[in-house]
Image 1 (cartoon, rainbow, N blue to C red):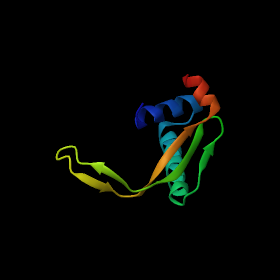
Image 2: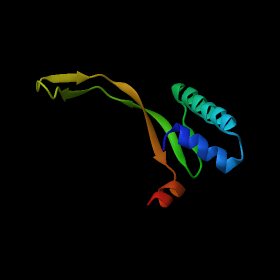
Image 3: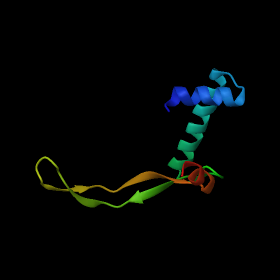
Image 4: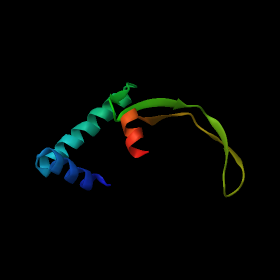
Length: 90
């Protein structure tokens, strides 16, 4: 499902117009992004939670040359599905 299909699904499920659904989805994405950027966790009960984790620097290999390289440390977004979502997808 891409963003346009998700907007259509939100519109049909909520009775909102597609334009309102797009604004709602964009607002959700913006609010989630801002919260994660601050280092906060976003939890949606039954669905799951988004959090930020720090990935340490590590050694890797360039697949073309085989030369060892250092992969720098960075922050990554993680998603942990909630119990209801995990049961439904099972």
